[in-house]
Amino acid sequence: MRIDLPFWVVLAYFDVKFWFLTVPAAIALALAGWYGADWLRGLRWAAFGAAALLALPFPVVAAIMVVADVRSASQLAALQRTLDREETIAGLLLPAGSKILFRDKAHSSVASIDLPHASSIRGMQLAGTLDWNDVSQLWSATLATDQPIDGWPCRAGPVEFDAAGIAQKCDLAAAHALLGFDLPPGTNVTRGNSGKPWNFRLPPDAELAVPALSTMAPAGVTLSVSSDGRLERITSGHGQTIAVRGVPLNSMNFYVRGDRVLAPLAEPFMVEGEMRPAGTGVRIDLPAGAVSLAGENWWLSE
Image 1 (cartoon, helix red, strand yellow):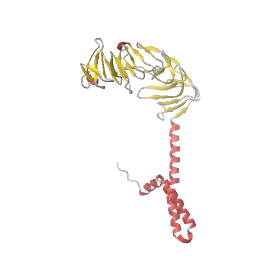
Image 2 (cartoon, rainbow, N blue to C red):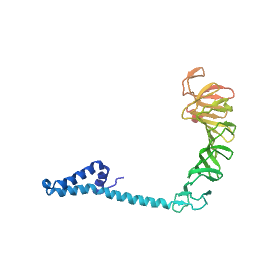
Image 3 (cartoon, helix red, strand yellow):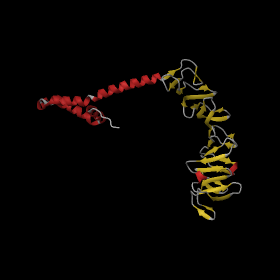
Image 4 (cartoon, rainbow, N blue to C red):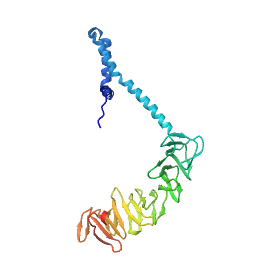
């Protein structure tokens, strides 16, 4: 869409944008008009005028910025409120001194809460800022100390919980058994909801035993696990190698579908009597241990 601006607005814009040229030019013209009276004669006033024209946009722009800052501060103030006493906001009992940022002037929806100090919120010791996500319907916050939450030994640091105060995500401060997996300290746990699987992201320095595959999941990978404890998928941007029934597989796209594993080879390997290159999709029948080639677009079709 074309926007037609007055010519003087365009000139003022370029005057301010290229200040490193226009400011020295304005100073030079002003000095020429002041000290060049004998040889400039009548042109000295033209020099003064040109200097004034070059300098004029700067105080105008400064005034506009001041007005914009004042207006922005006024609008922000209308969205903020600082509690002068303990009060329940968005279902959370907050201490005095908490600063609330709302999404609207009617204060009907909370965007974030700045706590004045570490405080007990929904039974959790939280500090810093609480942010509400309208999409996920979760609070993001910071645990002030290591503490148990809903049976999870959560580590001090980032945590997510829902409006009911149920933990949805945190890093484990200690080893913890969950859905049949003995998770090491540092594992990031994300609760499964609405049919979505649980996610266990392993720390960069600890493997995890996967009994269903009779193998170890490499450090740093993420395991997607159903609510009944079935491993569904392993993912990792680093593409570590995981060996299943002696077959070296790439953990970047690793699927478990029923009693079969589908994944690309991590390195050349003999499949169906022929050496196959790394990246070849293969299928492993877990009960029989048989290895075969996966079909085309196996990650979608099988």
